[in-house]
Length: 398
Image (cartoon, rainbow, N blue to C red):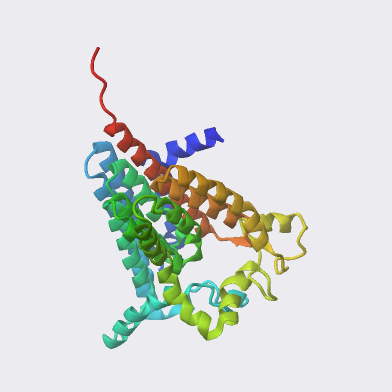
């Protein structure tokens, strides 16, 4: 296990190997999606491929030269991620969605009949949709994702960490092709506020950090595992009783208010329908549930014929709770003993990983989420260790 941890640290927690591995992955993915001409045609695909290669070369040159490394990486990300996203947005606005969406010539997926996301996911796009109508311009939700990505990038660049740690986190968030950012996967919506929460914590603003983690949970349930970690780490432990109660109430409001304000009205409107779409459908406890697929325990059980079919109902939620709850409990106890940002990220990420691997399905973008969160936790740990090391008194010479 320690060998795996050391190998992981040497690959994705160091700028050079991180750029080499993730940079090669995003370039290969871009060639399949765009360079081959499937969606955008050969000329546009070739331009994007050349732009990505030039961006990779410049990022590598920045590392070798030892100057402007983050700026060079940012230019590579613009070439390899932002330009394809803008090209696909332009394609949709000029040709229409039906010409290139993957499900056009496929049997209708059951997920098209359920809205599995939290309400804030679509509420976030409403102002931009209204503005686009007023301005008589096409609306594409990826414009919202781009703004969220810029917010996350600003959060990473603003962290008071060494450039190497910010670099690897930047690469893990934007160069992992499994995020499928240009195609419109929306993981960045919850990773952006979570990243800003890390920034607020690192800058000594715990209440703002708690609010950011709360917003992340309101956007995607994955963040639920971080909420108890943040609560325990920031639990008031000193001062008069009334003051501690007041601070605890403010902490609870920051963590839970975003979800309560955005989910509450829909639960009051039709709680059974809300639960069916967001929980029962993905957990596999209703007929016509989400099909078993991906990289989870469910897929293994299906391959071993222990589950009759990909549509079979099975209480994977109980399995998820059984594997994640003990780890979370032990992790919370450790956080209580030694609260830190690194421990919050590590425990939350580990509990999320176990829960996902025991779930009904695990999409490839979920693996990208876990990789970024793991890199963020590792970077936070190294940043904390560096701070402790530099704060120790220098022993006097004998």
